[in-house]
Length: 453
Ligand code: PLP
Image 1 (spheres, rainbow, N blue to C red):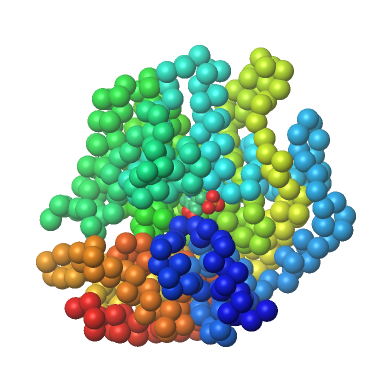
Image 2 (tube, protein in one colour; image 1 turned 60 degrees about the vertical axis):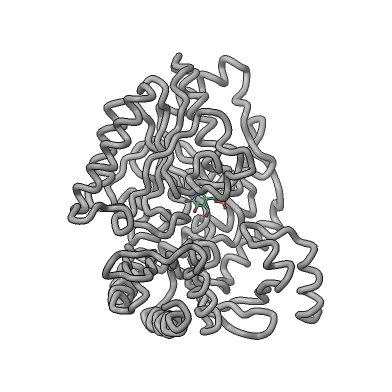
Protein backbone atom coordinates (compact mmCIF):
# COMPACT_ATOMS: atom_id res chain seq x y z
CA UNK A 1 0.00 0.00 0.00
CA UNK A 2 1.33 3.46 -0.86
CA UNK A 3 2.32 5.95 1.85
CA UNK A 4 -0.52 8.27 0.73
CA UNK A 5 -3.12 5.53 1.16
CA UNK A 6 -1.76 4.75 4.61
CA UNK A 7 -1.99 8.40 5.64
CA UNK A 8 -5.58 8.43 4.40
CA UNK A 9 -6.38 5.25 6.37
CA UNK A 10 -4.72 6.75 9.45
CA UNK A 11 -7.28 9.58 9.48
CA UNK A 12 -9.79 7.15 11.01
CA UNK A 13 -7.69 6.57 14.09
CA UNK A 14 -8.12 8.68 17.22
CA UNK A 15 -4.48 9.35 18.00
CA UNK A 16 -3.29 9.02 21.59
CA UNK A 17 -1.68 11.91 23.47
CA UNK A 18 -1.70 13.97 20.27
CA UNK A 19 -2.67 17.39 18.95
CA UNK A 20 -5.75 16.03 17.16
CA UNK A 21 -6.59 19.25 15.36
CA UNK A 22 -3.02 19.66 14.06
CA UNK A 23 -2.96 16.02 13.04
CA UNK A 24 -6.24 16.31 11.14
CA UNK A 25 -4.85 19.27 9.22
CA UNK A 26 -1.26 18.19 8.61
CA UNK A 27 -1.21 14.42 9.10
CA UNK A 28 1.50 12.68 11.07
CA UNK A 29 4.52 10.42 10.77
CA UNK A 30 3.94 6.78 9.90
CA UNK A 31 6.74 4.43 10.89
CA UNK A 32 7.29 1.54 8.53
CA UNK A 33 10.20 -0.48 9.88
CA UNK A 34 13.11 -0.56 12.28
CA UNK A 35 16.67 -1.84 12.54
CA UNK A 36 18.82 -1.53 15.65
CA UNK A 37 18.39 1.97 17.11
CA UNK A 38 16.92 3.33 13.86
CA UNK A 39 13.41 3.50 12.39
CA UNK A 40 12.24 4.44 8.89
CA UNK A 41 9.05 6.30 8.01
CA UNK A 42 6.81 5.44 5.07
CA UNK A 43 8.52 8.15 3.01
CA UNK A 44 11.82 6.30 3.46
CA UNK A 45 13.48 8.78 5.86
CA UNK A 46 15.50 7.23 8.67
CA UNK A 47 15.78 8.42 12.26
CA UNK A 48 17.83 7.54 15.31
CA UNK A 49 15.12 6.68 17.84
CA UNK A 50 16.50 8.56 20.85
CA UNK A 51 13.37 7.73 22.90
CA UNK A 52 13.32 3.98 22.16
CA UNK A 53 9.70 4.59 21.13
CA UNK A 54 8.05 5.45 24.45
CA UNK A 55 11.09 4.89 26.71
CA UNK A 56 10.78 1.20 26.07
CA UNK A 57 12.35 -0.57 23.05
CA UNK A 58 15.46 -1.46 25.04
CA UNK A 59 16.78 -3.97 22.51
CA UNK A 60 16.10 -1.73 19.53
CA UNK A 61 13.77 -2.48 16.65
CA UNK A 62 15.06 -5.73 15.11
CA UNK A 63 15.75 -8.33 17.81
CA UNK A 64 14.90 -11.58 16.01
CA UNK A 65 15.17 -13.76 19.11
CA UNK A 66 12.09 -12.06 20.53
CA UNK A 67 10.11 -12.66 17.35
CA UNK A 68 11.16 -16.31 17.46
CA UNK A 69 10.22 -16.68 21.13
CA UNK A 70 6.76 -15.28 20.36
CA UNK A 71 6.29 -17.55 17.34
CA UNK A 72 7.39 -20.66 19.24
CA UNK A 73 4.99 -19.88 22.10
CA UNK A 74 2.16 -19.18 19.67
CA UNK A 75 2.60 -22.62 18.16
CA UNK A 76 2.75 -24.32 21.56
CA UNK A 77 0.10 -22.51 23.60
CA UNK A 78 -1.02 -19.20 22.05
CA UNK A 79 -3.37 -18.32 24.88
CA UNK A 80 -4.32 -19.38 28.31
CA UNK A 81 -5.46 -17.48 31.36
CA UNK A 82 -4.43 -17.47 35.00
CA UNK A 83 -7.91 -17.37 36.62
CA UNK A 84 -9.45 -20.02 38.89
CA UNK A 85 -6.15 -21.60 39.95
CA UNK A 86 -4.89 -22.25 36.42
CA UNK A 87 -1.56 -21.12 35.00
CA UNK A 88 1.03 -22.09 32.38
CA UNK A 89 4.78 -22.53 32.11
CA UNK A 90 5.79 -19.07 30.83
CA UNK A 91 3.82 -17.29 33.61
CA UNK A 92 5.21 -19.57 36.33
CA UNK A 93 8.79 -19.20 35.12
CA UNK A 94 8.52 -15.44 34.69
CA UNK A 95 7.09 -15.11 38.22
CA UNK A 96 10.05 -17.00 39.64
CA UNK A 97 12.54 -15.05 37.53
CA UNK A 98 11.12 -11.60 38.31
CA UNK A 99 10.74 -12.10 42.04
CA UNK A 100 14.35 -13.34 42.00
CA UNK A 101 15.49 -10.11 40.33
CA UNK A 102 13.30 -7.82 42.45
CA UNK A 103 14.48 -5.75 45.42
CA UNK A 104 14.50 -7.69 48.66
CA UNK A 105 11.16 -8.76 50.10
CA UNK A 106 9.07 -8.41 46.95
CA UNK A 107 8.26 -12.10 46.65
CA UNK A 108 4.90 -12.03 44.85
CA UNK A 109 3.93 -10.77 41.42
CA UNK A 110 0.78 -9.98 39.44
CA UNK A 111 0.78 -9.49 35.67
CA UNK A 112 -1.12 -7.05 33.47
CA UNK A 113 -0.71 -5.65 29.95
CA UNK A 114 0.39 -2.05 30.60
CA UNK A 115 2.13 0.23 33.06
CA UNK A 116 -1.19 1.95 33.76
CA UNK A 117 -2.78 -1.34 34.77
CA UNK A 118 0.21 -2.26 36.94
CA UNK A 119 -0.22 0.99 38.90
CA UNK A 120 -4.01 0.76 38.89
CA UNK A 121 -3.69 -2.74 40.36
CA UNK A 122 -1.25 -1.41 42.98
CA UNK A 123 -3.79 1.22 44.04
CA UNK A 124 -6.54 -1.41 44.35
CA UNK A 125 -4.29 -3.71 46.36
CA UNK A 126 -3.36 -0.87 48.72
CA UNK A 127 -7.01 -0.10 49.43
CA UNK A 128 -7.79 -3.80 49.87
CA UNK A 129 -4.79 -4.21 52.19
CA UNK A 130 -5.88 -1.40 54.47
CA UNK A 131 -9.41 -2.79 54.64
CA UNK A 132 -8.00 -6.17 55.64
CA UNK A 133 -5.80 -4.47 58.24
CA UNK A 134 -8.88 -2.78 59.75
CA UNK A 135 -7.88 0.73 58.61
CA UNK A 136 -10.72 1.73 56.27
CA UNK A 137 -9.89 5.45 56.54
CA UNK A 138 -6.24 5.04 55.43
CA UNK A 139 -6.85 5.36 51.69
CA UNK A 140 -5.40 8.57 50.26
CA UNK A 141 -2.52 8.29 47.86
CA UNK A 142 0.14 10.92 47.28
CA UNK A 143 1.75 11.50 43.90
CA UNK A 144 3.87 14.35 42.59
CA UNK A 145 3.15 17.25 40.26
CA UNK A 146 4.23 16.18 36.75
CA UNK A 147 4.58 12.59 37.94
CA UNK A 148 3.19 10.08 35.47
CA UNK A 149 1.70 6.74 36.41
CA UNK A 150 -0.75 6.02 33.60
CA UNK A 151 -4.06 6.83 32.01
CA UNK A 152 -6.77 4.83 33.76
CA UNK A 153 -9.20 6.80 35.92
CA UNK A 154 -7.15 6.10 39.05
CA UNK A 155 -3.65 6.43 37.58
CA UNK A 156 -4.41 9.65 35.69
CA UNK A 157 -5.80 10.96 38.99
CA UNK A 158 -2.59 10.00 40.74
CA UNK A 159 -0.42 11.47 37.99
CA UNK A 160 0.34 15.17 38.20
CA UNK A 161 -0.33 16.01 34.55
CA UNK A 162 -2.99 18.74 34.30
CA UNK A 163 -3.75 18.19 30.59
CA UNK A 164 -4.57 14.53 31.30
CA UNK A 165 -7.05 15.55 33.99
CA UNK A 166 -8.74 18.71 32.68
CA UNK A 167 -12.25 18.03 31.30
CA UNK A 168 -11.88 14.32 32.04
CA UNK A 169 -13.32 15.17 35.49
CA UNK A 170 -10.09 14.05 37.14
CA UNK A 171 -8.63 13.68 39.72
CA UNK A 172 -11.52 11.40 40.67
CA UNK A 173 -12.83 11.67 44.22
CA UNK A 174 -10.81 12.95 47.13
CA UNK A 175 -8.23 10.19 47.48
CA UNK A 176 -5.43 11.64 45.34
CA UNK A 177 -3.04 14.30 46.62
CA UNK A 178 0.09 15.81 45.11
CA UNK A 179 3.35 17.30 46.33
CA UNK A 180 5.79 19.51 44.39
CA UNK A 181 7.84 18.54 41.43
CA UNK A 182 11.47 17.90 42.44
CA UNK A 183 13.08 19.59 39.43
CA UNK A 184 15.98 21.28 41.23
CA UNK A 185 17.12 23.36 38.26
CA UNK A 186 13.71 24.92 37.67
CA UNK A 187 12.17 25.17 41.12
CA UNK A 188 15.03 25.78 43.55
CA UNK A 189 15.27 29.18 45.21
CA UNK A 190 18.42 31.15 44.18
CA UNK A 191 21.30 30.04 46.42
CA UNK A 192 19.50 26.90 47.65
CA UNK A 193 21.71 23.77 47.59
CA UNK A 194 20.37 20.49 46.18
CA UNK A 195 20.24 19.04 49.69
CA UNK A 196 18.35 22.06 51.04
CA UNK A 197 15.93 21.81 48.13
CA UNK A 198 15.39 18.11 48.92
CA UNK A 199 14.84 18.95 52.58
CA UNK A 200 12.20 21.51 51.54
CA UNK A 201 10.49 18.86 49.37
CA UNK A 202 10.54 16.36 52.26
CA UNK A 203 9.18 18.94 54.70
CA UNK A 204 6.33 19.69 52.29
CA UNK A 205 5.45 15.99 52.13
CA UNK A 206 5.46 15.66 55.91
CA UNK A 207 3.37 18.81 56.33
CA UNK A 208 0.78 17.40 53.92
CA UNK A 209 0.69 14.08 55.79
CA UNK A 210 0.22 15.89 59.09
CA UNK A 211 -2.45 18.21 57.68
CA UNK A 212 -4.48 15.31 56.23
CA UNK A 213 -3.74 12.99 59.17
CA UNK A 214 -1.39 10.03 58.71
CA UNK A 215 -4.32 7.70 59.45
CA UNK A 216 -5.85 8.81 56.12
CA UNK A 217 -2.72 8.40 53.94
CA UNK A 218 -2.12 4.94 52.48
CA UNK A 219 0.75 5.32 50.03
CA UNK A 220 3.26 7.51 48.22
CA UNK A 221 4.03 6.77 44.56
CA UNK A 222 7.24 7.92 42.86
CA UNK A 223 9.18 7.18 39.71
CA UNK A 224 12.88 6.90 40.66
CA UNK A 225 13.62 9.16 37.67
CA UNK A 226 10.52 11.07 36.64
CA UNK A 227 9.91 10.26 32.96
CA UNK A 228 6.74 11.92 31.62
CA UNK A 229 7.54 14.95 33.81
CA UNK A 230 10.60 15.57 31.62
CA UNK A 231 13.25 12.98 32.51
CA UNK A 232 14.02 14.52 35.89
CA UNK A 233 16.61 12.84 38.11
CA UNK A 234 15.96 13.20 41.85
CA UNK A 235 17.96 15.91 43.60
CA UNK A 236 20.66 14.84 46.04
CA UNK A 237 19.26 13.43 49.28
CA UNK A 238 15.64 13.47 48.07
CA UNK A 239 14.66 9.84 48.62
CA UNK A 240 17.02 9.55 51.59
CA UNK A 241 14.90 12.17 53.36
CA UNK A 242 11.51 10.98 52.13
CA UNK A 243 11.72 7.29 52.97
CA UNK A 244 11.99 7.69 56.77
CA UNK A 245 8.97 10.03 56.72
CA UNK A 246 6.91 7.32 55.00
CA UNK A 247 8.12 4.71 57.50
CA UNK A 248 7.37 6.96 60.45
CA UNK A 249 3.76 7.46 59.30
CA UNK A 250 3.22 3.84 58.21
CA UNK A 251 2.73 4.85 54.57
CA UNK A 252 3.44 2.36 51.79
CA UNK A 253 6.12 3.32 49.28
CA UNK A 254 5.42 2.39 45.66
CA UNK A 255 8.24 2.79 43.17
CA UNK A 256 6.98 3.06 39.61
CA UNK A 257 9.80 1.47 37.63
CA UNK A 258 7.85 1.36 34.37
CA UNK A 259 10.65 3.39 32.75
CA UNK A 260 13.58 2.81 35.13
CA UNK A 261 13.33 -0.97 35.47
CA UNK A 262 15.75 -3.31 33.68
CA UNK A 263 18.87 -1.23 33.33
CA UNK A 264 17.72 2.22 32.29
CA UNK A 265 19.60 3.91 35.15
CA UNK A 266 22.64 1.60 34.90
CA UNK A 267 21.36 -0.86 37.53
CA UNK A 268 18.60 -3.44 37.31
CA UNK A 269 16.24 -1.06 39.14
CA UNK A 270 16.07 2.65 39.84
CA UNK A 271 15.69 1.39 43.43
CA UNK A 272 19.28 0.10 43.28
CA UNK A 273 20.56 3.39 41.88
CA UNK A 274 18.90 5.49 44.58
CA UNK A 275 18.78 3.11 47.58
CA UNK A 276 14.99 2.73 47.61
CA UNK A 277 13.15 0.10 49.65
CA UNK A 278 9.65 -0.14 48.23
CA UNK A 279 6.65 -2.12 49.49
CA UNK A 280 5.39 -2.37 45.91
CA UNK A 281 7.28 -2.06 42.64
CA UNK A 282 5.60 -1.73 39.25
CA UNK A 283 7.35 -2.36 35.94
CA UNK A 284 6.51 -2.80 32.23
CA UNK A 285 8.10 -1.50 29.00
CA UNK A 286 11.65 -2.94 29.08
CA UNK A 287 10.35 -6.11 30.77
CA UNK A 288 9.63 -7.40 27.25
CA UNK A 289 11.73 -4.81 25.39
CA UNK A 290 8.15 -3.73 24.50
CA UNK A 291 7.81 -6.39 21.82
CA UNK A 292 4.75 -7.62 23.73
CA UNK A 293 2.45 -5.70 26.09
CA UNK A 294 3.16 -6.91 29.63
CA UNK A 295 3.56 -5.31 33.04
CA UNK A 296 4.11 -6.55 36.56
CA UNK A 297 3.17 -5.46 40.07
CA UNK A 298 5.57 -6.89 42.65
CA UNK A 299 4.41 -6.90 46.25
CA UNK A 300 5.75 -7.64 49.72
CA UNK A 301 4.81 -10.61 51.91
CA UNK A 302 2.74 -8.28 54.12
CA UNK A 303 0.64 -7.15 51.15
CA UNK A 304 0.24 -10.74 49.98
CA UNK A 305 -0.99 -11.74 53.47
CA UNK A 306 -3.84 -9.27 53.02
CA UNK A 307 -4.76 -10.79 49.65
CA UNK A 308 -4.88 -14.22 51.27
CA UNK A 309 -7.04 -12.88 54.06
CA UNK A 310 -9.41 -11.19 51.59
CA UNK A 311 -9.60 -14.33 49.52
CA UNK A 312 -10.56 -16.35 52.61
CA UNK A 313 -13.15 -13.73 53.53
CA UNK A 314 -14.79 -13.51 50.08
CA UNK A 315 -14.08 -17.01 48.82
CA UNK A 316 -11.83 -15.67 46.05
CA UNK A 317 -9.39 -12.85 45.30
CA UNK A 318 -11.66 -10.80 43.07
CA UNK A 319 -9.21 -9.25 40.63
CA UNK A 320 -7.72 -10.20 37.26
CA UNK A 321 -7.56 -9.58 33.51
CA UNK A 322 -8.22 -11.89 30.54
CA UNK A 323 -4.80 -11.10 29.12
CA UNK A 324 -2.90 -10.87 32.43
CA UNK A 325 0.20 -13.11 32.21
CA UNK A 326 -0.50 -13.83 28.53
CA UNK A 327 1.73 -16.77 27.57
CA UNK A 328 3.19 -15.10 24.47
CA UNK A 329 4.01 -11.93 26.40
CA UNK A 330 5.54 -13.97 29.25
CA UNK A 331 7.65 -16.00 26.80
CA UNK A 332 8.94 -12.80 25.17
CA UNK A 333 9.68 -11.27 28.59
CA UNK A 334 11.62 -14.39 29.62
CA UNK A 335 13.66 -14.20 26.42
CA UNK A 336 14.26 -10.47 26.96
CA UNK A 337 15.60 -11.10 30.45
CA UNK A 338 17.81 -13.91 29.11
CA UNK A 339 19.24 -11.54 26.48
CA UNK A 340 19.93 -8.87 29.12
CA UNK A 341 21.91 -11.43 31.10
CA UNK A 342 23.77 -13.01 28.17
CA UNK A 343 24.80 -9.63 26.77
CA UNK A 344 25.37 -8.13 30.22
CA UNK A 345 23.23 -5.15 29.34
CA UNK A 346 23.90 -3.47 32.71
CA UNK A 347 27.65 -3.34 32.01
CA UNK A 348 26.95 -2.04 28.52
CA UNK A 349 24.76 0.79 29.88
CA UNK A 350 27.43 1.68 32.45
CA UNK A 351 30.11 1.68 29.75
CA UNK A 352 28.32 3.99 27.30
CA UNK A 353 26.54 6.19 29.86
CA UNK A 354 29.56 8.53 30.37
CA UNK A 355 29.71 9.18 26.61
CA UNK A 356 26.01 10.08 26.69
CA UNK A 357 26.07 12.20 29.86
CA UNK A 358 29.33 14.01 29.10
CA UNK A 359 28.12 14.74 25.57
CA UNK A 360 24.92 16.30 26.95
CA UNK A 361 26.89 18.17 29.60
CA UNK A 362 28.98 19.75 26.82
CA UNK A 363 25.77 21.04 25.21
CA UNK A 364 25.16 23.22 28.26
CA UNK A 365 27.35 25.79 26.52
CA UNK A 366 24.62 26.15 23.85
CA UNK A 367 22.58 29.35 24.16
CA UNK A 368 19.29 27.39 24.30
CA UNK A 369 20.34 24.87 26.95
CA UNK A 370 19.85 25.84 30.58
CA UNK A 371 20.43 22.45 32.11
CA UNK A 372 21.17 18.88 31.07
CA UNK A 373 21.31 16.02 33.53
CA UNK A 374 20.66 12.32 33.63
CA UNK A 375 21.75 8.92 34.83
CA UNK A 376 22.51 5.72 32.93
CA UNK A 377 20.74 6.19 29.59
CA UNK A 378 18.01 8.62 30.58
CA UNK A 379 18.42 12.38 30.53
CA UNK A 380 16.52 15.64 30.20
CA UNK A 381 17.64 18.89 28.61
CA UNK A 382 15.95 22.08 29.78
CA UNK A 383 15.59 24.84 27.18
CA UNK A 384 15.74 28.42 28.39
CA UNK A 385 15.02 31.77 26.72
CA UNK A 386 17.67 33.49 28.85
CA UNK A 387 19.71 31.10 30.89
CA UNK A 388 21.76 33.77 32.65
CA UNK A 389 18.53 35.14 34.12
CA UNK A 390 16.99 31.63 34.33
CA UNK A 391 14.09 32.84 32.22
CA UNK A 392 12.00 30.16 30.49
CA UNK A 393 10.35 30.67 27.11
CA UNK A 394 6.73 31.84 27.10
CA UNK A 395 4.45 28.84 26.49
CA UNK A 396 3.31 30.40 23.19
CA UNK A 397 6.86 30.13 21.80
CA UNK A 398 6.50 26.31 21.85
CA UNK A 399 10.27 26.10 22.12
CA UNK A 400 10.30 22.37 22.93
CA UNK A 401 8.19 21.52 19.89
CA UNK A 402 10.41 23.72 17.70
CA UNK A 403 13.50 21.79 18.82
CA UNK A 404 11.69 18.46 18.40
CA UNK A 405 10.70 19.41 14.82
CA UNK A 406 14.29 20.47 14.02
CA UNK A 407 15.50 17.11 15.36
CA UNK A 408 13.10 15.27 13.08
CA UNK A 409 14.41 17.24 10.10
CA UNK A 410 17.88 16.07 11.17
CA UNK A 411 16.87 12.39 11.43
CA UNK A 412 16.44 12.22 15.19
CA UNK A 413 13.36 11.35 17.23
CA UNK A 414 13.34 12.97 20.68
CA UNK A 415 10.45 13.94 22.92
CA UNK A 416 9.60 17.49 23.93
CA UNK A 417 7.86 17.64 27.30
CA UNK A 418 7.06 21.31 27.56
CA UNK A 419 10.49 22.85 27.12
CA UNK A 420 12.38 19.78 28.32
CA UNK A 421 13.82 17.46 25.72
CA UNK A 422 13.93 13.85 26.89
CA UNK A 423 16.39 11.17 25.77
CA UNK A 424 16.06 7.43 26.49
CA UNK A 425 17.72 5.63 23.57
CA UNK A 426 17.57 1.85 23.26
CA UNK A 427 19.90 0.29 25.84
CA UNK A 428 21.86 -1.39 23.04
CA UNK A 429 23.01 1.93 21.60
CA UNK A 430 26.76 2.04 20.88
CA UNK A 431 29.18 4.85 21.75
CA UNK A 432 29.43 5.76 18.03
CA UNK A 433 25.64 5.93 17.73
CA UNK A 434 25.47 8.14 20.83
CA UNK A 435 28.00 10.50 19.21
CA UNK A 436 25.88 10.58 16.03
CA UNK A 437 22.70 11.16 18.08
CA UNK A 438 24.25 14.10 19.95
CA UNK A 439 25.72 15.61 16.76
CA UNK A 440 22.23 15.57 15.20
CA UNK A 441 20.83 17.12 18.37
CA UNK A 442 23.46 19.86 18.40
CA UNK A 443 22.70 20.73 14.75
CA UNK A 444 19.00 20.83 15.56
CA UNK A 445 19.57 23.18 18.50
CA UNK A 446 21.50 25.53 16.20
CA UNK A 447 18.67 25.51 13.67
CA UNK A 448 15.96 26.04 16.30
CA UNK A 449 17.95 28.86 17.92
CA UNK A 450 17.79 30.82 14.68
CA UNK A 451 14.03 31.27 15.10
CA UNK A 452 13.69 31.06 18.88
CA UNK A 453 16.36 33.53 20.04
N1 PLP B 1 4.36 4.75 34.69
C1 PLP B 1 5.35 5.40 34.08
C2 PLP B 1 6.51 5.87 34.88
C3 PLP B 1 5.31 5.62 32.70
O1 PLP B 1 6.29 6.30 32.11
C4 PLP B 1 4.21 5.14 31.97
C5 PLP B 1 4.13 5.35 30.51
O2 PLP B 1 4.93 6.01 29.92
C6 PLP B 1 3.19 4.48 32.66
C7 PLP B 1 3.29 4.29 34.01
C8 PLP B 1 1.99 3.98 31.91
O3 PLP B 1 2.33 2.89 31.14
P1 PLP B 1 1.39 2.42 29.91
O4 PLP B 1 1.45 3.49 28.88
O5 PLP B 1 1.99 1.13 29.49
O6 PLP B 1 0.03 2.25 30.47
